[in-house]
Amino acid sequence: MEEITLEIEEATLGVARRTKTASVLLRSMPTSRKNALLNTIAAQLVHDSETICEANALDMEEGRKNGMTEGLLDRLFLDDARIEKISDAVREVVELPDPVGEILSETTLDNGLVLTQKRVPIGVIAMIYEARPNVTVDAAVLALKSGNAVVLRGGSAAKNTNIALIASMKRALDAQGINSDVVNTVDNFGRAGAAVLMKARGLVDLVIPRGGAGLIKTVVETATVPVIETGVGNCHVYVDKYADLVKALAIVENSKLHRVGVCNAAEKLLVHADIAHKFLPKIYDVFAKNYVTVHADVEAQRFAPKSLKMLPAHGKDWETEYLAKEIAVRVVANIDEAIAHIAMYSTGHTEAIVSEDDSAIAKFVENVDSAAVMINASTRFTDGGEFGFGAEIGISTQKLHVRGPMGLSALTSFAWIVKGDGHVRK
Image (cartoon, rainbow, N blue to C red; front, side, top):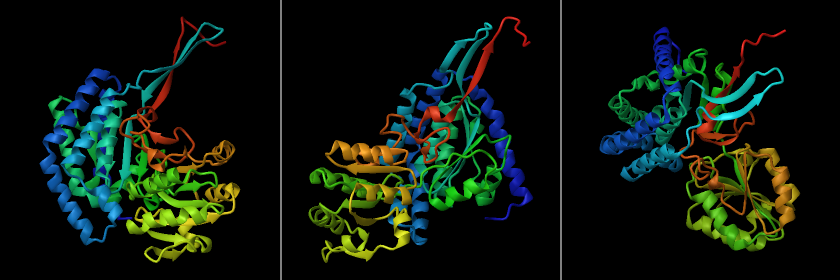
């Protein structure tokens, strides 16, 4: 961790204070006003596409020089098409219901008091993430729609891109006559600034880390502000002996190769021993053609063609989130062994079963304790957009407050409104 100088501490807390002050106006902002702002942000991002792409090119060049993996470079990369997609995601959030003000329950007590539970904004949310420029926009627009201000720390690898994205959003805020401090960044203060932010109780209400295991571990262990743990995805696909192998082939290929650098990509493949001789040669052919490195146990190695890059699987492979064209493969004797393996190594993100047997599916669903369990579907579907939430703030792998893809309602708390008529407690 970088040294926290007095100058950095004061500057970071200054940003947090300005964000806290600006957040007050969002609490009572009507939905129509918030939606107008988000539409302006969507248009402004497209308008500023050339500038954003130029900034991104600098980060991509630096990333290649620093040996960034293919998967991480893919996360970092922006072009006009991806900016259009980000803009479209903003417009999708416009169409979503505003959770603020939703009445969760209403009860009249025996003494005549009317008790109402209502959704309210959390306040100021700090996002600490890595080389994911889309998160810069996703976090800001989801925070704004749910009535929250946001402080962003996007990491040095995407520094130029994030500066351009935040500048674009601030131009949209200015155009709407809204205090631009509702979206702020502490990128200029590096990791030391992030460390100060994590302990800014009273100014920051929630910290959400989004990135690799190291980042999340640091935030969880360092922060004194409440944290929602997200994202590490050591995701498994289990191909049962009753699997339709055509479906299995498509599901495993999509889970691993659709986008290798994301948290819902499959990192482990478990195959029932009874069908390993039929299935593994087929999926290995797919892996070989796509230059995937396979870390396999002894039994799984038996079916590898010479064209496949095959390495023996060691203990650490079963717990590694590769985020690259790599996967670990194990042949299991039965579904119980698959479930036990997942229980030992899963990060609680997403697991999938491919099977046509209802009893096997029921057993898997009942015994696998992860935020999302897929039945005959790719792990890549664990995503806020795919679930209909619009752009997501992250995928929670913990069990308190929220779990799985986090949409707008995950960024709210609730208040109890108690209405009386001169009531006093006896």
